[in-house]
Length: 194
Image (tube, rainbow, N blue to C red; front, side, top):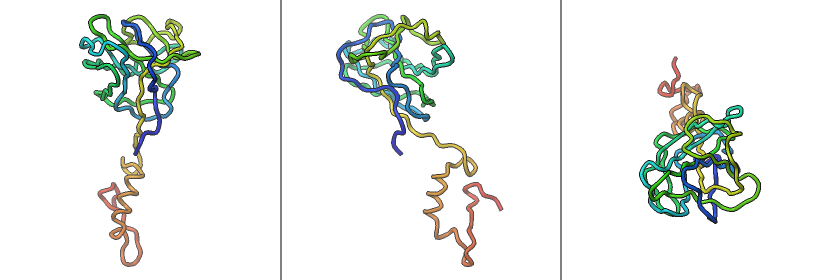
């Protein structure tokens, strides 16, 4: 099954972010509830970063604060497009925001952005790892070059099996589901008991 939504977007780079800032893409919040397994980051310059100087972040608005719900250090990036597999797939809600920290020193991979209008991003000096007041963040018009697909999550139904898995299995075994007198047999291995 394919993606059911997105968070962030890819850009045609017109510049790169400053170092020692945390950036949040305000223009492209999550469009669906699901799970993110990998993030694409576009780096404008500084092809190789000093290890532990860059981090992927996902934020959730909680009242008047930005809450960090995911933070992962990235140890290797190159100039251009980087696809980073998340160490732990992250559950996403509609409206969650993708972000990035660019490190302090060394050859840092700088996040690409595309010029725009309106509020494209929020930014804050330093590596933000805890909840912070939205009012304390600066803003800019540029759109950040970060993107992830949101995949569906399935849970519940038929003793923990999702309905579509149940129906698929039933269809594949339909010859064995009916008795000669047309009674439906519900398989015990799918959680049914008699």
